[in-house]
Length: 177
Picture 1: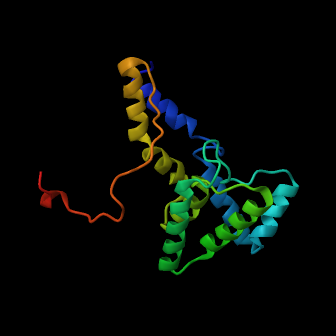
Picture 2: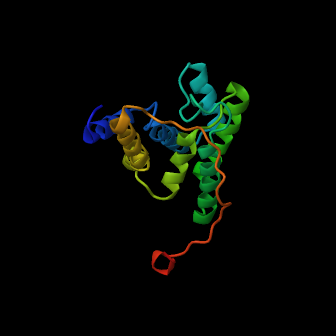
């Protein structure tokens, strides 16, 4: 029953650190380190695993199969890298993902490919977590409103049955209302 401002501030604070909202930063730092050293991405990950260190961007508490957000971000990262003429970050990511999937039976999560996507878009590492937070504020706000209305959180499990995409974009001023 916290007020709106406190609840949203708490949600933003929960993203701080490498295990949740900051995992994409850790992924990109790993890719930068591999790129700087000129080493093999798979050998780098093997070294992390041998040292019992975490490879960020893999596994999810809810998604036991592939994180559907990762599926879309992988495609985005690949296309953006091709369009930019620099496939370095995507290529490294793809090799790491394939290795971890076979070796550790873990799937990439939303953080893994958001790292290369954001970097290819020219977004600074320090803005990764704020972007992650901004994209979630509307949902967090809805949850706070639900709780304040009747002290009950609603978390529906549903399957999307709306229109297939891509849907033609119609500018607001041309829409019939």
